[in-house]
Image 1 (tube, rainbow, N blue to C red):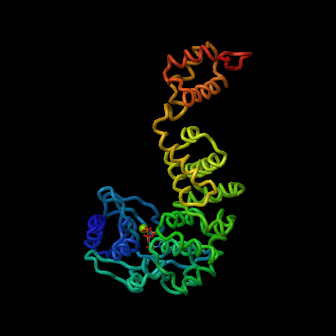
Image 2: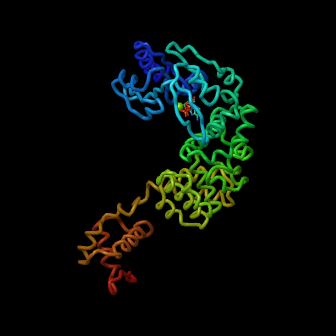
Image 3: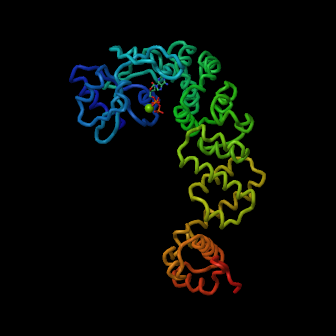
Amino acid sequence: MNELFITGKQILETLQKSDYEAYFVGGCVRDYQMGRPINDVDITTDALPEEVESLFENTVDVGKEHGTIIVLIDDIPFEVTTFRVESEYSDHRRPDSVSFTEELEGDLERRDFTMNAMAMDKKYQLIDPYSGMEAIQQKRISTVGPAEARFDEDALRILRAIRFKAQLGFTIDEETLTAMERHSGHLQHVAIERSITELKKTYAAKYLEEVKNLMVQTGIKKNIPFLKEVDDNKFMSTTAFSFIEEVALQVYMKESLLKYISYLKLSNREKSNIIEMVDILKDLEYDKHVKAISYKYNYDTLKNVEALVNENQFSDKLRWHDILGNAIEMKPLLPIQKTSDIDINGKELMQHFERRGGRWIKELFTILEQEILYNQLQNDKKKLLEWIDVHVEFKEGNISLTGS
Ligand code: ATP
Ligand code: MG
């Protein structure tokens, strides 16, 4: 039995001892029934958040107003949520209010797809009022209740259906698919962070290719920031292994897309990763020296781009493949990995020249970097200073290189 369920069972038992109902629910039940790996175990109960807090030693309030408390057991977080039904949605985004119900069935009814609307008790007995198991057996994705209403309540579910299809390779039911198409315009009202979470999962999934076509056909693509600016054929023709890589490929193919990246609200790290991938592709196109590519970029990013080059159509693909292979291979062997690896610092340079700091230091570092990388200058303080004495002089306060 999965460790997470064994640990999670303690939570069910503690709640039941205090006369509450408690069940495993949602994705973990689906994945358990399908024999898939379990990421996290969610629990649903009729205990109110305050009651959950009082029963466990380690809890984190992550959204008490939505009924959710995290209970930590052996440092593993479990989301414990009070049974709830959601009322009126007026802006296609989030419930106007959340009211607690004592009915497990009511809680399951508000869930998105039938396969996600199952619960399991501590003896692993399934509670499946919406035929989630049947959907799993028939490899179908189907909303709980009328699809029209369910997507109207929350358009994010459209992207979730796509994500689950990409992960599981299931077929989306006709009624569900038609409703997704009809409501795809509402995706514009969904907070981009929520959409991106689903898109990232979609891109990490096994059956991405199949759903890309569907994203175009159903009008999903044209309602997502950035993606809506991308040409449909170009969107469908790429092979990317993450959403970030997709963005990078598209920006490389059409530089004017760069300005739309900000709408995706990605982290700074993700944005610089995108820029780095685009720069590598451009350097390949402009025939930059292998060693320069090797030195300038992150090892992992080079590896990512290598995989992209292998899987996508580029006119000079074979040559790019070789350059990247060499750049990756030589990277760990380079005498320095970054400017700060140079065996001398700014202060030492200032002392050596008896000069105050200024732009010259940066310039000198660039020169030293080049000499170490390309002209076999040894990265050793003494050797560097000797080289500097022979080659570097100041003319009217500016650095210049002497001929010899
Ligand atoms: P994963 O394995 O990726 O975590 P999951 O099914 O657990 O998949 P979550 O996003 O963690 O997905 O959501 C947990 C559960 O909450 C879902 O299984 C579903 O029952 C319910 N749920 C999540 N988002 C929605 C939504 N937008 N509308 C209705 N129910 C939802
Ligand atoms: Mg989950």
